[in-house]
Amino acid sequence: MPIQNVNQFLKNRNAVLALFLTAICFFLLWVPTGFEDRQPAGSQYARARITALDNSRLKQHVLVKTGFQDLTVEILDGPFQGRTERAVNYLTGKLEIDEFYLAGQTILLEFSADQGRITTSHPRGVYRLGVEMWLFGLFGVLVIVSGGWTGLRALLSFVFAALMIWKVMVPCFLKGYDPVLLGLAVVTCLIGAVSFLVGGLNRTGLVTFLGSFIGLNLTYLLSKIFYKLFWVHGAIRPFSEMLLYTGFPHLDLGKIFLAGIFTASSGAIMDVAMDISVSMHELKLKNPDVSLREHLASGMAVGRAVIGTMTTTLLLAYSGGYVTMLMVFMGQGIPLRNIFNLNLVSAEVLDTLVGSFGVVLVAPVTVLIGGLMFRRGRKEDGRVS
Image: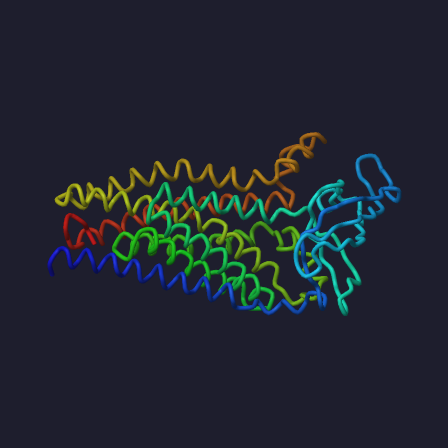
């Protein structure tokens, strides 16, 4: 086959994959989750500006406020644009949940209407969606400018992953599907999408996928073993107990906890597999006559360097959200042995160490797969396909 025809074929199949996943993304955007009808009937949303407020019903209890704010708001969009309405902001005394509003702020207003008249209205937080969209747009531009077509495919994989989690994983968990089997299936799809979108529909992408897939399953097996030895339970996750009391008592929180462990570590596992796969591909490209032993040794050298930083990355990622909890423990003079023996902290230790095990194990697996597959790769136009 002429070189130009081969290159055109490789480009076309990567473009076909990108178009296929783009179509899936649009389909996932359109498909309902099945839980839309749990919203109050007739609920609508609009931006609204606070034009006046009354704080006379608030009570200050040291650091927290309870009671309610009486708000006067002007609706800024939708069929009721320009209309002035009253809304009440109830404060429960929990700083992590409550929002205290100021005059002039733009909020997200939820309301119900009947025959052209608003019957109820509730503030749902300061309006942040506009800033979030701008931030995501800036992120997308930066990824595309930095990575070119590869960056565009990486952005597509990012969107695909977010939609798979929100439109497939989360609703299926709520419907009672086995969290472990479903989680493994969804994460496998995500690994495939990222591996072949970023690495390409070639041996580089295949090595990345196989290494990540094996690393994912090893992580699950380790999490299953040590989950029982740690004697922790799934209810320690935020909002887990609330799930049981809001119409989902049938959920297996333990399996959801396990699914969360390998899902959280799958990104780092893919990073390691991709770094090793690309490095071994480039080495084979620059030195087609490299021996298998030298090829494997070079792959492991890259793997050791990536592992050295990725395990610390997992530690920082998991512990960063619990800095205030650690400050509370230290501020109370609680000994370290007591801290690490708590079920909440033990769960994070399980997350961090099992995820790190997965990252460490994926390196030699990917190196071995890459050494064997690139060894037999066809050399076309200087590329090992």
